[in-house]
Each structure stands twice: as structure tokens, then as C-alpha cells.
Image 1 (spheres, rainbow, N blue to C red):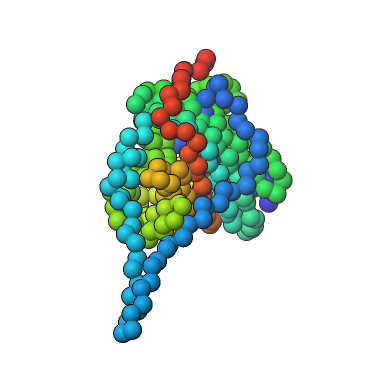
Image 2: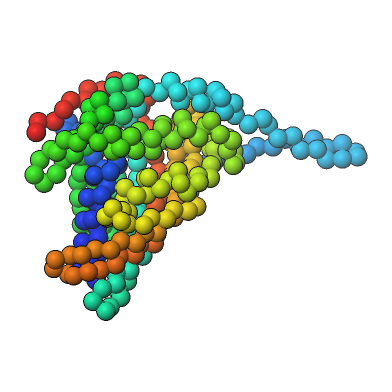
Length: 287
């Protein structure tokens, strides 16, 4: 089963590279610090209670001005960020008259820079599989929506707009720009303001497909999508994106034969914004 799990991890990493999120810039070295998940900032909802002889009234302070938050996010032209993602799956592989199960966990540490003015970016990521601790570094550069992916044979250029479109849309700033136009499901206030949104399945399927579709005929299901946006003094500082996912893929491997791979698990990614509107240089890599 470990051999099958290794093949699956390779498939997942290849899919992520071909899709949207792994990758980065040639001038930045992927960090090798710990891949533990980030934790959400502590938030509190304060209330003021006034008591009279006849009744008790609770005065809840007004929530944040969401329009002002959206205006601030709309003014973000460039930003750098760090994200920690966790992908935990139960993998079932059926083939040759047998069925085997295994738990697969990937930890992905990502550092990146995105420029919404020039539509350019660099992203470096380190993926660690558990429990064996195998480590894979990946890099990606985007210059004017043309994507360059670093592979074992060097940099590969692709002009597929779908790859970069997903990158912009599912960045923490892209998500904030989209969902701040809608009413949040809940708001927590305090030193950190946290807005929480439930995300319909169809809105997350393009992102889930990047990581879980090992072939064009893979069937992907997504549910329980949730987005948190974190603000401090009206400024976006990070957030969290999570969802449950399942998929089924038929594989015809020349060595292992025909297999059906079923995956059932959860994706959780925490973002921290490190800088805003600091222009960085992004250049095409030497191919």
C-alpha cells in the first residue's frame, strides 16, 4: 500500500503544479522551517449590559463597516504572504481483486508574492508527506499571466490562463475581494475582527480539482466549505480556507495494472499577510 500511496502523492503534486497553487520565484529559496498549521487569532465579542429595576437590556456594539473593509482590500495592489496547508485523506485503492486503505497526510508551507497590477507572482512551496517525512520543493513564476513551472527537467512555460486565474481567485486577497461583497454568516470582534462565510460547493470545486483530479475523468465532490477573513484596525491580515472533499479516479498503470483510487478527506489552509503594497521585481526564469 505504501507504494500506491507514494504514486498517489506524486499524482497530487503533479496536479497541483499543473493547476494553480504550488510554485514560485527563482530569486527566493523555499523555507525549510516547520510545516505546522497556523492558528487563528483570538477574537472576542464584547457586550455592554445595562440593568434597570424592570428589565435587563444587552447592547451589542455595531459590527465592522464591511464596505470600508472591502474598499481597503480593493486597494491592495501587491502583497506577500505565508500559508500553511494541511491535506488529510483516507485513500482506498481497488485493483486486481483487492482493496487496500491508507491514511495520507501532506503538509504544505508556501511563501509568495502577488502583484495585481502587473499580474505577476512568484510562489515557493515545500511539501512534506507524513509519517515518512519525504520533502518536495516546488517553484512557480507568473509574468503577465504567463506561468512558468519548475520541473525536474527545468522551467516549463504555459500560457494556459486557467492556471493563473485560479491563482488570483483563491489567493487570500482574491477571496476577500469576492466574499466581502456578501453578508457573512458570523462576525467576531475584538483586537482581531473575524468574518466567517459558508462557501457553496460549486465555488470551491475548481480549486479542489487542482489537487484531487489525477485524470480528466476524475469525479470530485466538495462540501462544508468555510472561509474566515481576519482584520486588524481595518486591514486584512490573513484568514483560513477549509473544505471536505472526495474523489474517484480510474488509473491504468503499465506496472500496477488497472486501479480505482478513492480519496476522502479535508483541506485546511491558513494565510498570513506579511506585507502590502511593496513592489517586488518578478522576472521570467532562464529556460
